[in-house]
Amino acid sequence: MSVESLLLRNVRMVLADGSLFEGDLLCENGRIAAIDRILVGADRCIDGAGRVLLPGVIDPQVHFREPGKEYKEDLQTGSWACARGGVTSFLEMPNTSPPTTTQERLQDKLDRAALKCVVNYGFFIGATADNLDELKTAEPACGVKIFMGASTGDLLVDDPVVLERIFREVPRLIAVHAEDESRIRERTRVFAGRTDPHVHSQLRDNECARLATAQALALSRRYRRRLHILHLSTAEEVELLRQDKPAWVTAEATPQHLFWTTDAYDKIGMRAKMNPPLRSEADRRALWAGLRSGLIDLIATDHAPHLKAEKDRDYSEAAAGMTGVETSLPLMLTAVHRGEATLNDVTRWMSVNPALAYAIPNKGRIAPGYDADLALVDMETFQTVQAQDLLTRCGWSPFEGWSLTGWPALTVVGGQIAFENGEVHRETRGRPLSFGPVS
Image (cartoon, rainbow, N blue to C red; front, side, top):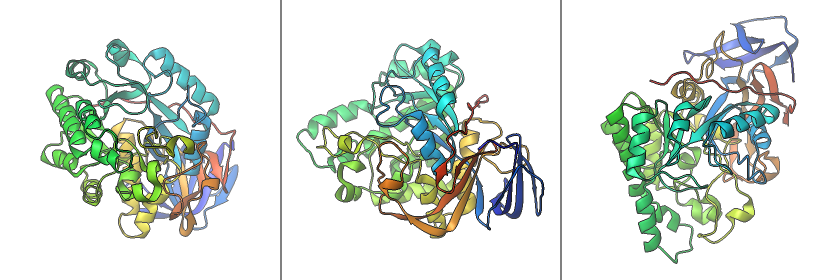
């Protein structure tokens, strides 16, 4: 919904300093113009009825499958799902068809998103063995994505010489999918013939993740290169960071690894298959401890949609990946309800720190002058995750049947309403994100 000014009244907002302030917030020309006890005068006024107002979630790892696999998800349906989940900005991965490995393909995604997305958007450029010049110059890219182990798509960089050259010569953020490809291949031979879901976590075991993360950290230290470790999943990786985490290194965890363990294979079968795979209860607890201590900086969904028919197959044929943008914020706010985190924690992990990690200006906080990207959430009502309510095109969630609180009642993107009363405002358009220099 297009308005020049929007007034949100009677809300409890989590401010930039972490305090909870009860009052009104005025949006004008896409920015937060004022915060006070009582404000008046706007094109549209909405009574928040005492609900909690959070800065919009920035999801820094999604896969929206466009171009090439739009039958699973496209930029439009992915952005609708974001708006329903309170996600006001996303960073999308390059393993599409064709992969985003050139300036031309990056621009194609930006052009598509401008026509379709109701939330803000940014894109990675994918590393290959022979696109070094593009990695250095492609703009506006949020960073370089390196698949150190094979996953969904055709991108893989496992040659140590190529990896070192990228870390040495590319002057921008490098985000790694840290699984050791040689160990994956070795253990694929060892476990050949196994078809049960549990084999996935044994084949791509903890050591597979530890080896790759240690290699990425070593390269980052050697060249003082800005490194982001995607979807950290093991206690061993948390320990690596505890031993030595340079100031220029950040890491993320996914809700799947925070809320599921390998027990999920017995409950949802191959729908629990993802890369890196689900881990033990000890690993899950280590991730939570890493988040609370600051060793893990932020949360990303790794939203990776596949049709149910592509998931409900034997192990060797089942696609790897889970959906997540619609449920990540309610999952974390349900953890707040249970006393496992605070509102300030969630704001830091899902809004403040992603903006800092990717040097996205004017995002991630509720403060005058910041972009009016906001999520008004209901912390009093529980709602069950049901397939028929989902806006993701693939139509399923690993969290179906879970009762969650903190669902967005209203999502605002650049001062415009993107989601309200259960409906997406499809005419709203997000904007391309900009990225400052990384240090």
